[in-house]
Image (cartoon, rainbow, N blue to C red; front, side):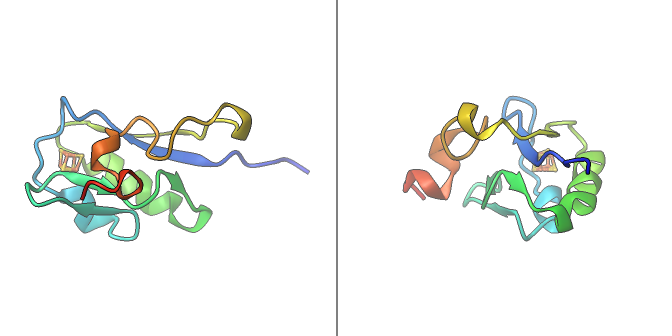
Length: 94
Ligand code: SF4
């Protein structure tokens, strides 16, 4: 039986223009902060949302979103993945 590796949503904030298309296409995982920049509710994409996540990645006009294999649990970084931690709900600064 083949295992499907989890996917992770990451963002390059240096490329993001903050217009929020990703939050419209993937509201289950992305919301916007008060400046219109995306904040991930979670970076690991549930299997049922991978298709929508791919659509959001493809639609991002700045190519700032990426869908990558999730890090292995023993190598996982802090919550929020490569997203800036101060923009994650886990960081508690919202
Ligand atoms: S769609 Fe892309 S450019 Fe627009 S807010 Fe989302 S990540 Fe940023």
